[in-house]
Amino acid sequence: MSIKVRSATVADVPVILGFIRDLAEYEKELDKVEATEDDLRAALFGQEPKVFAHIAQDPSGTPVGFALWFLNFSTWTGKHGIYLEDLYVTPEARGGGYGKALLAELARVAVARGYARYEWACLDWNTPSIRFYESLGAKAMNEWTGYRLAGEALRAVAR
Image (tube, rainbow, N blue to C red; front, side):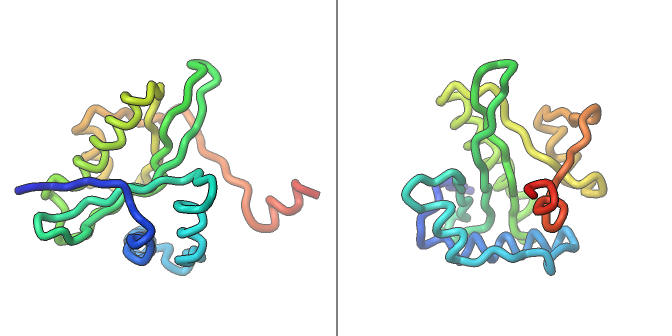
């Protein structure tokens, strides 16, 4: 089987939004998706993109998954890293090596560009994904607790 992973193009925006919605449904948060095709087009392909995406295709060329990522920075290493915001493979394509191929492509990007890290978050109930990540050698960062300011809390702090 031939797995192709490529950088996303503007023509992939509807597919990417569909994958985002599918992922949100899997994570039981579909009602939280506000992103539009216009939002993604601007973020991924605007004048100075800050977000990037890769697409996994099956042998027929059909997109079956995506990875969406952006740069972060480690003050300790003094280098950028990759933060993987979303990784999704369609249910029918899972187990076919597409997720691993997407992760491997981003690892190649990180190594080629001299980035120090490659990080992501995983819901603690998502046992299949946790097992998959650990099989690749990824380590849980259990000593860290993520925080988020959003909505009214974000606006209140900004005031």
